[in-house]
Structures are given as structure tokens and as C-alpha cells.
Length: 240
Image (tube, rainbow, N blue to C red; front, side, top):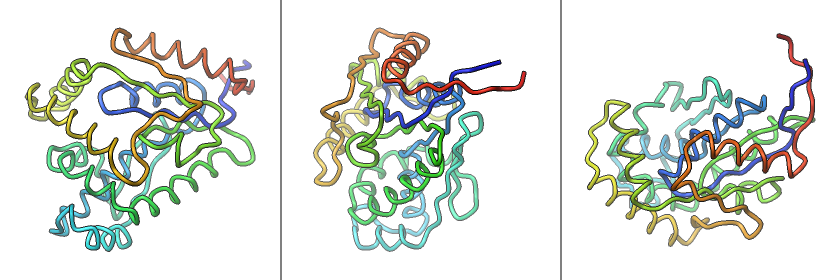
């Protein structure tokens, strides 16, 4: 049976709590595409920094750790994941300590150079000679893949994002304090939007999608419509 598959790159950017990770992964899975969570890569480096006992604000020490550690990504949307020096850290990187430090670590120029180079390699593998990948993060459409055929910037009110993050933490068994989560969301917005290198911002040619009043299925329908409108679908024979 002929099924539509993604042929090209979809960049999904935006702050935390907008639903971009779940939406991007689901979109990739439905279109037979690869999926890359760039934020998980920075979280993995942050975990390496913390394990090494380095201060996240010590840029030289952070860069040294980034050069030494090995971060590898699984790009199958059905089984995504990240390993640090060969060990799965998908759960550990979502903890409070990493969340507190990741903005400082990801603002280090050499960290971003290393991670962006790796992200571009993964994108090339997924799309050469043909194929598709959905990449989500904060600077995908502006820095990592400005040539993406579709750039989407997901946003939502701070209240909605804090509630979603709190619910995600609770569902994963992590401590969930809505007030703390909202403060953290606001703090990360400020740090990521005002850093000197690759700040969080919407690409000029990105499509803004406000998810405040949308559920996941509504967001996915919007993304599918945008992919089709950009001519990024190709038919492929899948065995059933």
C-alpha cells in the first residue's frame, strides 16, 4: 500500500512545555521519518559536566568535558534515546539537576559547535540520498538547518507550558511542584532567548503555531497540513 513519507527536513523550534517533543516524534513516526531531539544532546553534555564535578558556568571546563564525552542519539521515533559514553541516560537527563544547569552549558560556544556538527551529520545521514527527518530544539531553523523545507515555531502561554511540564514530571515519577516548574520555565526562557550564541528565536520564514488551546491531535493535524502544503511528501510502498 502506498503511504506518504517525509522527504526533507522539518525543523520544530520553541520553548519548553509547548508539546514540541511529543508532536515532533509523533509526526516523524507517522511519516516514516527519522527524529532528532537536539535538546537531549545538550542535556547529555550537561550530565557529563555534573558527573565530572565541573561548574556549569566554567566555560573552559565545560568545553573540555564536551570534547571528551561521547553523546550518541537514536533517531528511530518509535525508540528514540540518548547515550552518554555508551550508557543510556534518557531518564537521568530529565532530572532537576540537569534542567537547572543545561542553559548555562548549552550557552558555551564550543559545546554548540560540537553538538551542531553532530546534529548536521545525523540530518545528512537521514536525508541522503533521499529520506526525511523531524528535528526539534531551539535553534534548528535558525542555525542547525536553515535550509529546512518547513520550519515551525511552537509557542504557548507560560501558564500552559508550566502545567504541561508539571504533568510530564508527575507522569515520569519526578517531583512536581507547579510553582517551581513555572519559575524554571520563565528562567530558561530568559536565559535561552538572551544568550549570545544561537539564542532561542523564531526563524523569519517559520510558521508560528500557538498550542495553548490545542491538544496534541490538533497540533499534529496542523503539522501534517503544513508538511503537505510545502510539498515534502513522497509516496512509498510499505508492506502490511
